[in-house]
Length: 465
Image (cartoon, rainbow, N blue to C red; front, top):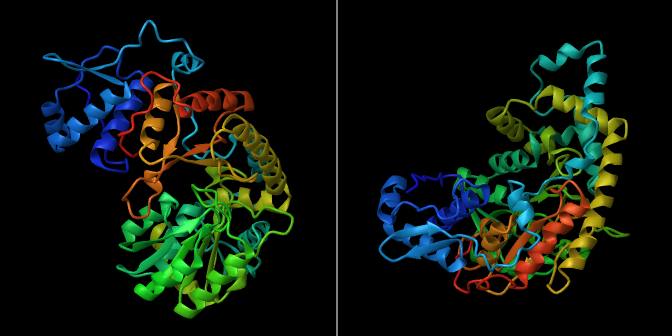
């Protein structure tokens, strides 16, 4: 019997779902081998410090999903592959020793800019050693100018003096919330939204207020009703390509939301890590309401995630509080990263890389739409992910079976603002695979799983992850 003892603290969702996710990951990695006996439910309950019912439910769902086998009087075992099970394309992934990651929103690293050239250029500068010195909390004037330039690519225009450098968009979300919200404040958001916002809200003790929406995003009438029910401090949203649903607000809906914000005194926290798309893209919310708009842009998805450079633009009256939040959380961004990012913006590298990545994303979107055409795929050409709505109770089974076959995707639970109900969908990220062929292989496996063409079908009572 194995001494398997997973770590659950960094996972999200109910206890049994976190345990089941850890179980399937370790089976996929080979940490747990077919035929291996798992700890007894009582032993694992004591080891992990969780309720016995949590382990019982995880094991039961594992058996229903085909990952585990329960043998009367002997215990629970990792399922063996049946000799009669047809050999599908997914076996190559398992034999190659790893998962094909369509779960994390990787920014097409295969098209990243040339870091070696950037470092060589930086080394030739006469004042390279300045990169080792303390910097202003919001960035130097030159860095702020570059940030304002980059934000224009995302549809926002403002003066450099109101732009602040952050360690990526996630950090910018935290800094903005810390600057204008107090513990207990309500922050309106999409029903399904960015987990980084939810994590920041938990740390800052804020209360997300999920607002119903449709295929376009937040419904203005629902937002207005929520403001009438209780006092809300602000609205967090991604007007261009909400993560995970890929919904984008029309110009008319943005104007309606701004009108509601002004009437109810809402501040607008706009997270736009993807540029607006279409021939006549709608204006940024913060451009429509500059007196209350906090705008976030980032270089992570369109240039390089490892730079950890994001830009937060806010009304000038909030500068002091933003600088204080920057000082409290990181003092300033690493100067080397700021210099590389600024140089790439100034010499056009950032824009060229972004355009290449957007073109590649569009090509990959076409592949996803082709292979998943039998489902309602929600996305857009500029997106690095697609959202596939599913019937209630199906998403967890899809996630688990896809992982068994060597493909990782994300269910809706981590994005749920209220943590209740079934989010009814999966997010499929297309930026991780190194090539379109590799992406196609993974999507073919996923298409098979979504069609229910596997042993035993998708369990109707699977948990939501």
